[in-house]
Length: 267
Image (cartoon, rainbow, N blue to C red; front, side):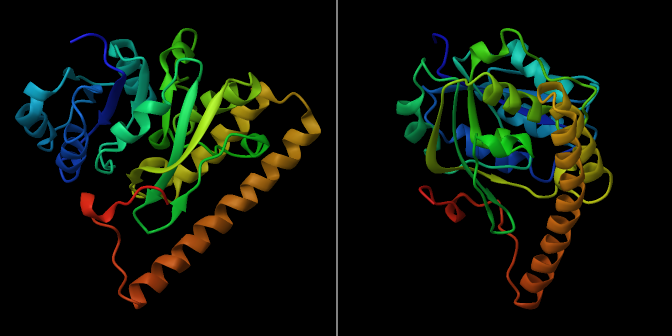
């Protein structure tokens, strides 16, 4: 077929327990709208068998060691042929027909079209591009369709292991790139991922965010205030999340399962 409207890129490493749900949610979309690339980092847990099961429906896939998730995402960017790029984690899923609903809004004058993300703990991450982006990343890449021209002179910086996508958000904001928010749930996001987990992932994310911000915000005093604030804010949000999780457990409210029937758009 001609170049697709959307190129979907999923980065995989030992995601055998969730990958098939992700694949099915993507491959159930309107096939005239997208192609699909899987970038595997050398999985040894059965992920490759799952990929091979669906390889006839993929644009392509590779399996080789990489230097981390953003190195793998860069490989996907190099292979993508679509006018728009969309990154979906190997433990995340798409709502039914979300590409068909978003497609009319993917106009070439825009740099990014984005919506919201439903977390598997039931919370909604409401994406936003605005001044708050100077404090933290408010644009999940699982919520965003990026026009390919954004990557003409950009690749994710691999020295930022946890939050390299924040740099792209700050570029979009600081360059006043045209964007459009659509009030749809774009994906269900797993809170078990590296940058969402407690400990080293969160700490690395704070460090990355503060270092990335300094590239684009030159005022040292404002950077200092925002850096301290972020170091206080993230532990608070982590503690709050743990309390909510315990409450859900007491109330026997289960984490959202990877079942497409759980997803409703327009939230």
